[in-house]
Image (cartoon, rainbow, N blue to C red; front, top):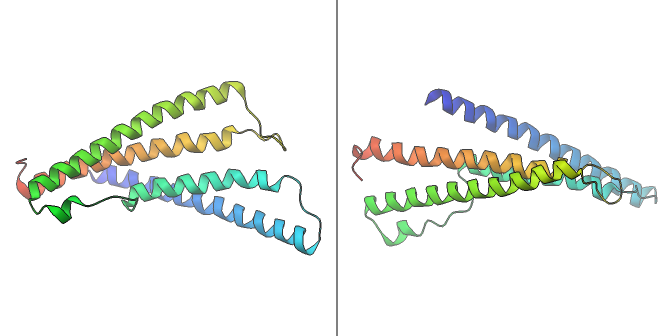
Length: 168
């Protein structure tokens, strides 16, 4: 389990580096755009289109990082209405399993779309940049989220066994 935890920590650090790098590029592009448009009175052609690529990576890496940290949006209403630990555990396990199933279905769909986009080599409208760089972010980050959802299932099961000896 310690080796798997190290792999997850390593994956999180890589995501953090890519997210910070994408955010730095995005901020630099915005600063250049503002300077050229409002100071030099000469806007840079197509910079808005270029900004979409780091925006998509930052947004999706942020979602996968929230999955790692378990800070994504959840509705913990079961704990408010019920104090029975067994029922809370069952609902937590159902939540994690449903999240994993949805993640796998989305990964399957996005993989199909990703493979299709690789085949047609779609380009952006103005600068003709390969859109696979943006569409690849969706696939990569959803796979990472599915892995973290599987981790959540395992951690929920192991926490129950550790706390209550495995009686469900």
